[in-house]
Image 1 (tube, rainbow, N blue to C red):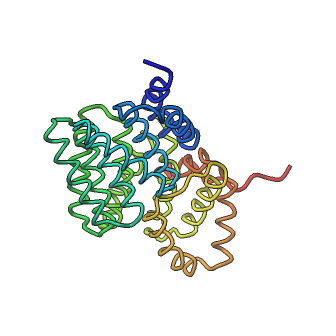
Image 2 (image 1 turned 30 degrees about the horizontal axis):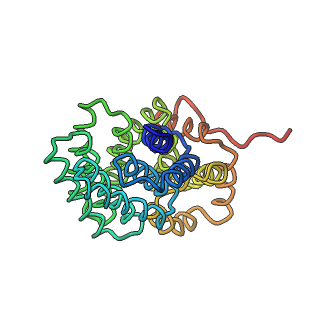
Length: 306
């Protein structure tokens, strides 16, 4: 294998490290350089994999036009090569871009086609991804029973396969599904397990979403000041790492904020938010974990000036 193909293959091997440990921007830049270096190569499986990796990382950075281009090129190569496994993956990638663009109907179409491909191939791992993505999309269109069903099917497969990263991803989605269904106890149960798995697996890509979901769940239980505090922690995480919520989740949060602020009062909300900005990600996760056992740990205030 020549140097350009080796560089393309490296992109695929490092995909999960870049995606789940907080190195999306670095990974996307490496993929772009490898693709430029191999631009004279004919369409190959390796090139499609690098394009797919770059598309996924661009999606996580919400550079959606770039992501769309990478995934579309990867899908075209995979269709030309007859790579059914790759076709399913690229359909999932394109569906994710569509959902982040709030084009829910198109996203669901991509996910349904991908699910059919994965079931035809008998690839249970990819089938679970497709089921989870369908559950995610159905949550945003308000079809909560379908969202619950798809996610529970995917979660059962992921548990059986021992896919802990997939388990955490699905649990994060189920928090919002349960909360929207009015099942606060279920949402807390999903949140607690998701937090524990995320920490055990060092899954940085889920931290902002977990803190945000905890804030929404706290507010649903009339703890709007605590919600404001944790949103402050989210703001700090975004400022320090660039971590952001997916667009539909940010839309939901933006719609909820005015009522929270009115309930608490503007000055009190701002004070709680500022106190949250003094927390780093691990301190915020500590508070959320302690929230399940409030008698053992009190939330910490901002650090004293030195």
